[in-house]
Length: 131
Image 1: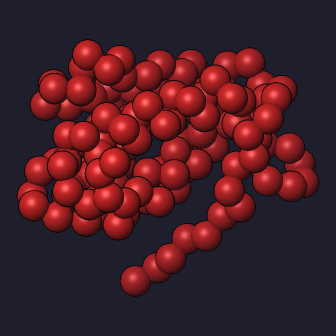
Image 2: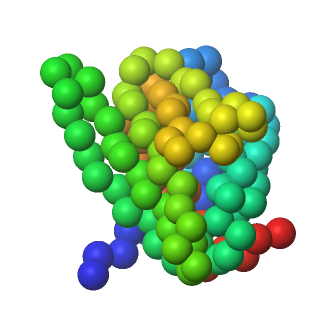
């Protein structure tokens, strides 16, 4: 099994306007307070839906035409799951809280760097208990 490690993004003033994470040439990634809050809302949505600790996060990359996406399957210990389709589109869009009951959530990220950091962040949910 391969384990990926990365520096935890620092919450601060992001210099990038249309991206989830700012990536300076040296040092850790930076995420704005706004996007950090959005991540915490999404974490709450995921944990509420699962109702048990997160058991696994599985990513399936897809390419349809010129669009690149990752289908993310997050499963709880009791078998409940959340499916999120994350598409690289040049902009950031987020699932709204009212979408939390839908079978699949859709979101967009600006680029591959945002996609990778988001996947790494989602993987930190493994073992997290509902709050």
